[in-house]
Image 1 (cartoon, rainbow, N blue to C red):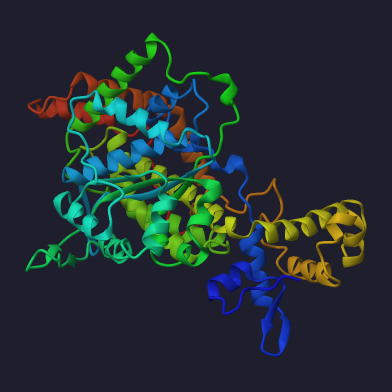
Image 2: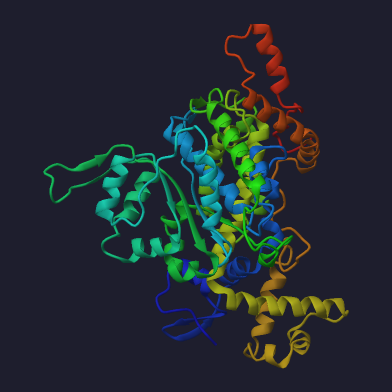
Length: 515
């Protein structure tokens, strides 16, 4: 039986440990806690439909219009949608937007994201098309950091363009250089400090004084081939502080079309009109009142987010995803609030529950994606555990006792050859110990139940919001385009506009966890 590598780190032990481990005295069985951690980390798999990005695209919004622009392609909607989000984050960052939370301080919309897509999924073409659209408008272009720099060049580039947008294609290869090559190795500690806006410095050979960046910050969007990510970034690096600073999203292939439906992308005279229209909306969003000023929260947002966070204990608290990922993704919700409020055309108003709820949906998408990335490091062992679980389900459905002997009989000869004597019974024992954990090996269940303090109440609210969502968002975009908001309007006119602009559904969530 394969055993874990020599001198494993604790993370590798948990993730890659088989059912035996080497000791100085020989092999031993994994302890109960070790088995449970192993099963949890490797067993709860997200189905492709869990990555449906449509739940992140409000109807009638600018994001929906962007998605429709990609309808006549086989490109995953996640790629253009996330690039719009990241470009918006960088635009707001570079033009002075921020959010101040009492006791926390000033928060910048500096999102750091990595997208993973299958090979041949046009992951480069999608952001290029978004850039092509935005460049047609009149709004100021987003400043970008140069790529491919050594560490000495990188800090000079950031010093000259602090706050810029770092867009990195083939980010797995870039991270491999940063983590393994001498000419790039200082980028990692500098990024760790830049994440928290701590001062970074470097003394150049040609300079007598240090080059100092007092408050470094930037937005980051990287793209990589899903299948090769684990070949470029090893498990130890994935689980240390560097890679955990980034949010991840998985751009799964669309199920409504494939490459053979589309010989050319963005073909026909109508495409140019669509690009011009989208560029006009982007300009209107950039010109909206309050877009690049300090954002505020209404009184309901922080209680809502606290309740959402507490509710994660029942879903993600028992999952395989390391808590450090959960914590950083959770904090990124505060950065998302500004970006999504801007994209919804509501910058002049305090951030509300509609925006906060959308931000939590993005966070849960990143939870799923990060778990997917972590689990890619041991597909073979996952499949062996899954084989036993599936056979156990068949045995149980046939009315037989789920024992090692019966499960073994339910396997094919080839499947049985994967296991040593007693190993099937050991796996079953662990599965039985944690069988109450929702979602294990059950494609129809949901181990990541929708996070909320009061699920029934939130479902009702969301249904009512969706009823008016398209109408509300389309009206906002029309009014932004037409410039109907006159800053010199009378107080009465302004109050009338505020009534129209307010959320169609007003509600208060009880935050005690009970109705």
